[in-house]
Picture 1 (cartoon, rainbow, N blue to C red):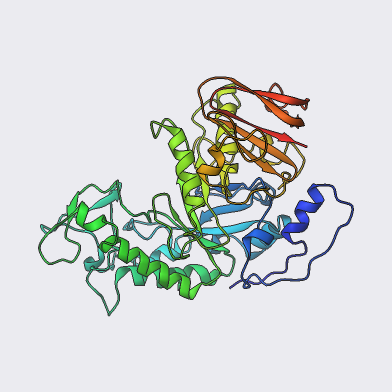
Picture 2 (picture 1 turned 60 degrees about the horizontal axis):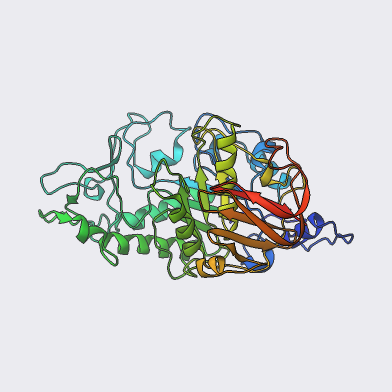
Length: 447
């Protein structure tokens, strides 16, 4: 595991942002030591970048604006170690996660040096690029037809009933590859497991032969809770956790969090009506999952959005505020991306229009549940008005209007809007004891 010193502990960042006069320097700590999220997790807001472009990485200063950065595991040998050292030096809060996909097999690939890890994972020979991966570990029907999850890539069989090769299940082999090939680069704080959900909804076959006994199992049999797919993933998670006890392990959106094996989940297209009919359901599902207690600490839930509107347009800024504030209702990280996962986005609310990372400080009510957020309350974390949700922090509050109608809220004391440049109508810096919020919008107010 990579060991670096942290010159400034997270709790001191909050103190600096709150303009406290005393600046204390923390003792050197090892990244191998356990982290207690309540005391040493980053202050709020918490931001992320979900950057999957394979051609180039953004400059250090751009990536360092975020608290969590997800990039492909291959970048560990594409970029010099100094790049990642500078990244952490620039932002001591930052956690770097290796993007890993062990489900979609790769049969055609570029140069060995550029795709070194994939060559090892899928057992592609360096010289003639022949695919040597065991056929027994691929998902196929009893008739021998391959099952695909994405494009023409044959899906791997993560169940606990897959045939063993050299005494190992595929899921055990995949976990060992992550530990022995990805993690040994020494730059990672954790791993993001893509296509690692309770059910593979995008598979092009609704039944296939998981144990190669000549009989196809149905979707209901394969993906049932406690079924072969679920048991297989659990085997992999236990194997990873045993080898990497303090690593941040994050899975895809619909994976059940249990037994403290995973630190959280990634929700793609969070609260996006273009993907799901009711974005409010996403908000409540995220809060439920993040407050369930099944995850390991520190909790790392990441909500990802791409920009489907004209960049900088009023509707794009409103949707961004809604998703940003919705993420702040629990302890997750918001990852706004541009038109795809190769374009970074950044909004005034993310650093308080120049106030600095973590400018809101710590929440006054940790880990609020849906019940706590919807409980009627005139002040503090709760609901000041039907359909409006509020969460309080040391240095401010956030309000989310989940209704389609404009609402006006009377506050218990004056708060100031941010002084922003992207949307100076909303973030005009005005201080007042009441606020009006458009339908399906959110706002950040500071003390």
